[in-house]
Length: 366
Image (cartoon, rainbow, N blue to C red; front, top):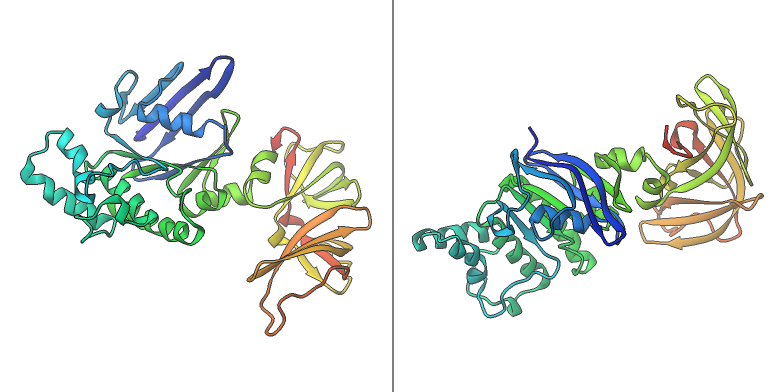
């Protein structure tokens, strides 16, 4: 049995359905992420799990126990907020000890538990400091320690790293992964940051307009999106709309306006005349100065570099075909003494294998 089960959960605000009949299960020890744009319902779903908001329909079961009507303080669930929510007049030790005191934990046990929580988040020696004496990352770690000190079955994290700068956020991501492994507590994490979700999670639920578009492992969601929304929202993706004109064995042809015939892998359920989209990640496209052709398992299109964006380790190239279609690709800047390979205006050939593109039907992934 799963640790957390959400069954047909719905939440409305007036005529607006924010969470629409969602069902999912989360296993014990899992790092599970709710990912989506602002307004998709992910935070509302988290608030209902925490008990800060009540659903209009459905159930939330923790270890088989229905949490409907159970107040937040009586749930074996703790929440870490974006703004830390620390008491400024209390020391680090006082902040962490607070939930233990509210639970009438014997004073003889509190110090040991606080010390263990500080060790968990690598803040041993910071017990006597006040929140204003800490960095943003340290304050967030105190917030996490306070949530973990009672050893809840479930830790909810609502955009906990969004207030941190990029370098500190990356460092905290690594610390969160290690911490979750060490304490073994189930994490349910809310974020709108796709890269963060891919880096942290065992599984991700991609949400859109109150629904789950796809629930899967990060590699599956990135490489095999099940809808146009997921393909477009997760990372960067070229999306070529077209109509299937031919199916021959493992390969089918699509007529894409501005490009012509594009090869893709044949997928079950698709027929000649079916409309759909080829989703193609930039890193799966090869760019070369020489116009190449005749390779049976590759697509080749010639064009010129319309724009480029130098990003240090890689350069993003926007290549425009003769038909006016823009194709985004990227190359690692690995050549010694040469920061990038092409300049704006250069003629290039772009190519990708037939199995590099991912076909999406008009109704989603086939």
